[in-house]
Image (cartoon, rainbow, N blue to C red; front, side):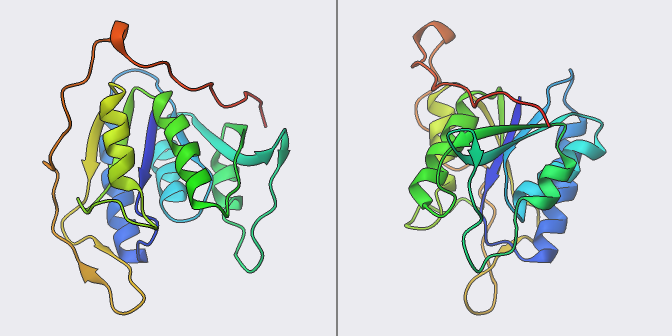
Length: 195
């Protein structure tokens, strides 16, 4: 599987740049590996469109309480509609979409079950809201191939005007991945189900 994670606060112009770059990257991979993403607006929908445009299948993970989809947090638009409409398969995964730590753990599960991670990341460290740097390190520590996606002209949204951040595709890497025989055990796969 090919998974995408990354910054959530991307303005529309940056999302368009990112989507084009994701499509280019996904189209050049050999084999039929599907795309895998946690449901949401912004990056997940852009990745979903890129995966479908490339002719690959899309698997979307929905937040669930047991096997029942979780409710969308009050006051927020339904971030699930577009990406689930793009999906060939929908799988429930127990996590609370309103809880940042639960979302990070859900992303770790997706990363651990993937062969490749496309990280939409400007190279900034993990902070109290954004865990992209952590997920990149997590993927590398689990032997998952990582490609950083941060097109020229991309910026992150902020409460005030957007501030450009420099691209850092060669950010420091942890130690080389271990061989498959010495990898830590992967977490349980998201529950399979079909739409």
